[in-house]
Length: 527
Image (cartoon, rainbow, N blue to C red; front, side, top):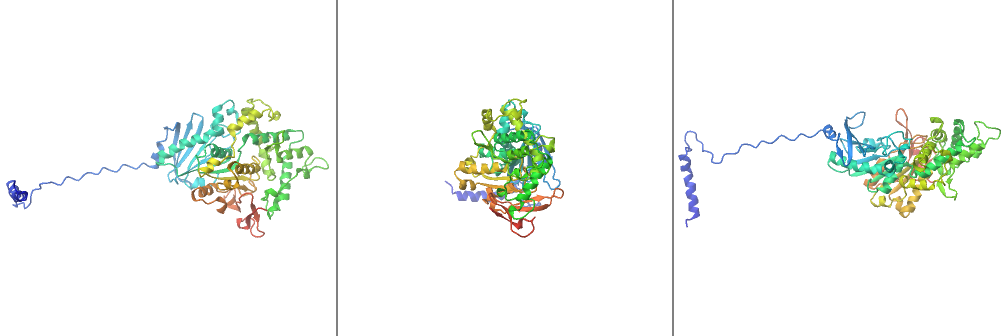
């Protein structure tokens, strides 16, 4: 066998010869031929164009996703301080309509805005200011029907409409929204929140009790959590007003409201037009009894009876409580709309809503005379409606998955009594195993002088979405966040007064000195 090293040397010595034979020596050109030519540079393909926010929006128009038919996808440019977003509208099973706003600059969170009344329309504007400015994906729906929020006729013999409104619409739309979010951003929302007032507050509690994993944090404002009991109280108030001599004029209503303020305003340490120490405010309409004939400065016995019906607990024949009644305060602002109806043609919203439940859910008779409604006779129908409409206080599953809840209610609310929220808060403690378990995941705040969801003489603007997000994400309880409630000028939107938001059962008490419109002049006290 030849030595391999000598063979290698032979090959190397032969290379110049081979090159010369091929005409490649070091002659005139002075260059060696290239045995292994360098390959031509690889052409890098041009980068794939990145889709614009508008193009990412357009893909949703006319698409089908998660069982929903998406209708329009409209790119909305930034304007007037609002960031740009994609507005997507869609429908489920032909009757449940929804709207989703997909911000270009997303904060990786979702906020579902609850509805109101019997729904029928979409209101996607969050109650809390940060909901509209912090980059949330926003979602809202119409409860499964379209039309006037006072009209309950769509529910007559319509199980689909009843189920959607009662408990299913929010969950169904939320499932579709998750798919929309994944398609737009390539990931799920890191945190999902819900905020609702009135019927939206009921929807919030329905979500927490029936679908506890849908949302990480929930803001519940003035919840109509027990439609069937609340609306029985509505009907009872309407009957009192319809009794001979029971109607109350605007002058009489104003008299009641001013008397309550005069009697209770200073109980919080200052006379500022806002009754803050609500628990200490007791009012007996009989102090206004006429002594020398009827006049705008007094109440007749039938009118006193009407007022007492509104303020008192509604009870069944066996003495058990149906509804806790309303506390005094803000009658001059709330009753013309909700009770007497003088602001809207003569029938208050209370009776209109109560009539819808009686006619289209309980009796199934659109021509039924609601003034003749006997809850005891129709108790079975009320119980059946409650299985669809009413929320329970059992929040164990919601708390168990880490959910956090804020409950808030205005003390001058003449649609839904703040006393109902006190009852619910106490019932939650019973249902979950004690106040300490409840308080680890739920806090309750009364809003002095605030009417239904907003309005009234009290500070009605408070950001509870930001508060619940801080609690859920950072573990900071709302009661330790120094939250302020403010009243904004209706024209300039500048704050005109502020109060600390006080955890129930405390209230903002004046310190005895300082600007009465400044939150610094108040502290949260229990008496």
